[in-house]
Image (cartoon, rainbow, N blue to C red):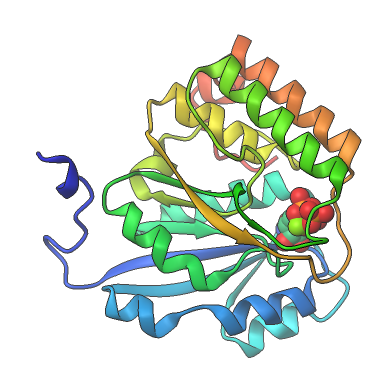
Amino acid sequence: MIEAMKNDFSLCHPMRNVIIMLPTLDEAKGLEAVAENIPHEKMKEMGWNCQVWVVDGGSNDDTKAVARKNQFQFIPQQGKGKGAAIRLGFSKFLESGKDALIMLDSDGTYDAREIPRFLEKLSTFDVVVGDRLNGEIEPDAMTRMNYFGNHVLTWLATGMYGITINDLCSGYWAFSKKAISRLKLNSMKFEIEAEMYTSCVKEKLEIKNIPIRYSARIGHAKLGSVSDGWRIFRKLIVRRIFGTPIEAKIGKGNLDIE
Ligand SMILES: Nc1nc2c(ncn2[C@@H]2O[C@H](COP(=O)(O)OP(=O)(O)OP(=O)(O)O)[C@@H](O)[C@H]2O)c(=O)[nH]1
Ligand SMILES: [Mg+2]
């Protein structure tokens, strides 16, 4: 089959279904901003029905109310951690039978108006990653320390695994159903994106990097630069040595919720 037709979603169905997954922890204001920018009409024109899922880590603000108001599905997670939330969303996605999933943070840093660019690339690639480091970073969107850390971790990842990723810690990814069904993950926190990359490499899923805009966050950050940077680095090393999580090896699957 020629490359351009690899994921040709229009071949058998007139409309396909995409889930937009938004992890939240006290992001009422950010979520409102993301909601306003979701390009429903444009997606419809492109042949995609969209449903929005908010996977919440126990917010104490109005996040749930904002989700309800926008008719988003609200999925409470049992414990905490972005990694656990993402894996819960992936597992529900596979049960849902939908065709594709796009995840982005709900803090207003990523622009939901760029979703159509990801959907376009999904017709040819199984994994599309938004690249802030070669995109447009708004002043004050990233501290110097985080800018440096993101570059170092990205270089290390590419050096250790030999497959180019332009922005390892990006929170803006799109996946085909095939890609999500192949991922083997057990991350609990902010090391999840690094593990998604390592699993793509292991499963030989081709990654397409596209430059994106990155804006200053609305509300408070939950990430601790040094401690989470260390967790990400540790995950790169562990997955280099042990390619898949143990629970995947014993057949329980990568998507178990811890
Ligand atoms: N469900 C869930 N979401 C979380 C949790 N922790 C963080 N998030 C969400 O994950 C996304 C990324 O978290 P951030 O605090 O923005 O982390 P970051 O983007 O790496 O760091 P900054 O660059 O400082 O914003 C946001 O939408 C958070 O609300 C959690 O425990 N559970
Ligand atoms: Mg953020």
